[in-house]
Image 1: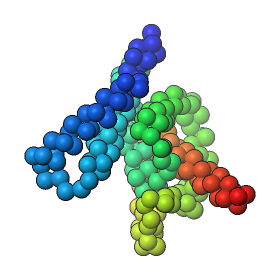
Image 2: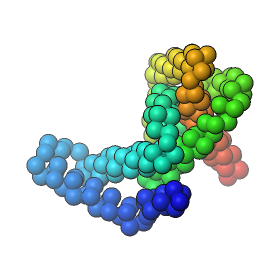
Image 3: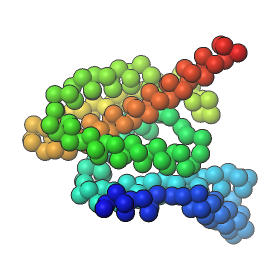
Image 4: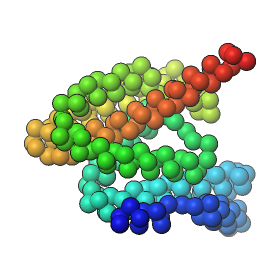
Length: 212
């Protein structure tokens, strides 16, 4: 029954058109009464991003409430963002695909939380694999956001620091017999999955260019 209720809150094409229209109206207001100086398209895009992220977070919150995992979702979100913001990762072409991907990652993380609870020993090789990804690839390069050598080094150091803090925290939670270490593990994995998706996309793009 909960899964049927979830279908009614998934954005449709009509909803996305409403988001775009709302973004246009807000942009017109800011251009007329605010201190907007950039082009209208910039504000429309930014407002659409904000609304899409808000809907995605709201959707995950509703799912967490239905599954009685609000605390787990909050901890997962914080862990995910601490790594994701420095590691970078996959970027979708549309707001809808981004919304679907982020929501799917969150729901998948809630589903695998039980796996870490029943098999905590698997967290060790998982953390080692995530550490390898972060150390060798953070931050993920993106053509629209070029970084200098100093920025890359700084972002990698912050990502490694966040990773070690989360790892130590998860160990403490495990030793205290608190189940929230599984949410931390899922958050780290979720961010690394997006990083691997971005690396795969970059590899396929380079391969296609070589073939051409």
